[in-house]
Image (cartoon, rainbow, N blue to C red; front, side):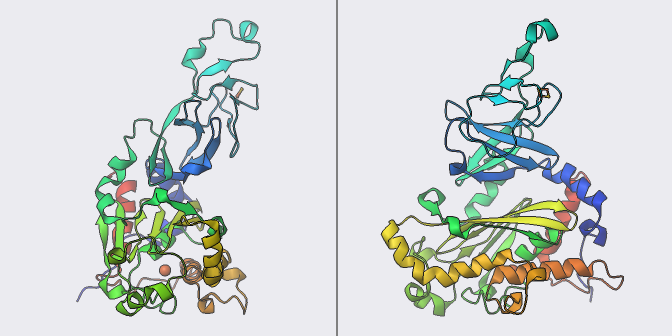
Length: 384
Ligand code: FES
Ligand SMILES: [Fe+2]
């Protein structure tokens, strides 16, 4: 009997050279999540993101349209926009004050007549990138001719939850940003590993019927769905800590992973993102944000005491396994995120041991892990 094995070598998870290839071949060539639509509400608001090798900013124009540009001044290349900015009338480079309008046109150059005789400002507008909206989120792509986000995700759409995302509101207290001391692929592999659900999370995700999960890849994207257990479903109104956001005949969890590194967690009560950004070969940042039912503030407060335990569990996920002490032991934390962070960091550490090897890989329930590795390899070797 042959043993299923991993596709990628150890250095894919530890080497700087491999990390840089991924930045160029994957993260510079795919759509990147940039934020929620409400993050950039007024004309002149800006938002900066790093997409692989490209620093890109998004600006809302006076016409209320979003535009994305490479964050590089056309004079000598200084980064134009520093971080999140609000309601600016124009965009001025900090170095020599070259100034652009919100549509990216160069409109003012200090000492223009003496210093740059005959300068054609119309050729020196900011270089555009692509920007698009999908399910309440903003995405950017370094290539202005990248097409649409729907082209990129299209075939996945029917395999996502029926949630009406725009009708949900963000629950800001549930937002977290934390660093995991592990390669971004370890974090993705953990997200799409079906095998661990009933083991690592035996105590935390037992409301779902993992044996009935349906999953697989559609293009480079991963789709996953599982129903609630019959017992949990029978008493759903008692169990659910938050108001339901799906009709009774559609309850369950959709947990897709959009390539490369945007996990969604679409459940019967909340809709969250899990955005993974590689920071280095062995460091990743995870940002989570959550939407819930839009209920009146009175009703919200009434819900809050019931859900306090639920959210406090989510919030403890900002502790990495290293910081955990006796009271914060991730394995007794009742928090599935802390359990995941713990195993990712421990697995990353083992990669440095000469004794490390993958012994076998489950035929079905670990097949997403191997398939994701193959997709990464295909990008790096030019097959995608
Ligand atoms: S580099 Fe921007 S004005 Fe000189
Ligand atoms: Fe997990």
